[in-house]
Length: 249
Image 1 (cartoon, one colour):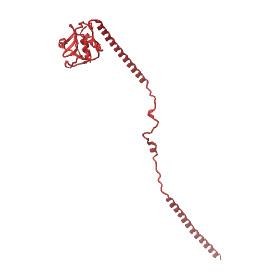
Image 2 (cartoon, helix red, strand yellow; image 1 turned 90 degrees about the horizontal axis):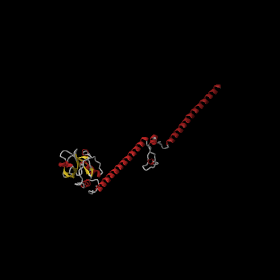
Image 3 (tube, rainbow, N blue to C red; image 1 turned 135 degrees about the horizontal axis):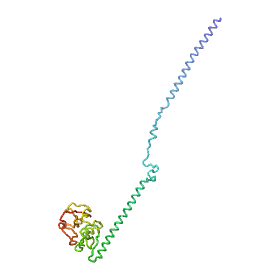
Image 4 (cartoon, rainbow, N blue to C red; image 1 turned 90 degrees about the vertical axis):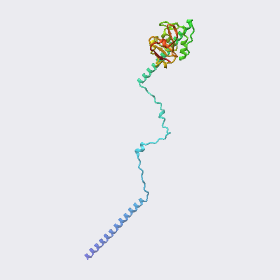
């Protein structure tokens, strides 16, 4: 009897074990099915690709419209400063320019006074009337010089219409044109610009050497002051030796 009860108990346990074994696979299968259904559900959404941005490039690259107004930096009124050396240089340059203008004005006044005094001397001489030059041109110079031909005697060391020597005559005539020349023929042979030969000489040029000075009038002739007074002479007569040709105008 006891043996029969033990067999019944064993049989009941075996049946229970079989039942549990059948339920567990079913539950696992159900769980797998649910997982598969969830995966399928996620695949039903469209795939999204996130754009990657180059943050460094975006931060360093900027596009500006050509007509954009960013405050008008170029129109800012920024004060310009100068060093003390620059200020001193500008002050020195201004002082030098002022001095140059004063000297030029004084020289012009002195020349004007000299011409005025000479003209007064001519007017008061009473021997002849002289018309002052009307400009700083060659024709004006020659016209002015021609007025003394045959009227002013030769005086050694003189340089006025009362009497003059060769270089004094040239000095006086050019002085009335506003040109200051030395009173010595050798020095007059170095003034102005050199002319190569008589073929290149022009009226108004100075012809001079250590012994004589004259003004060229063209055609191989000069106007000069020599022992016979103020007159026209051929160059070959008054310059038997070498000479210099100098151009002022």
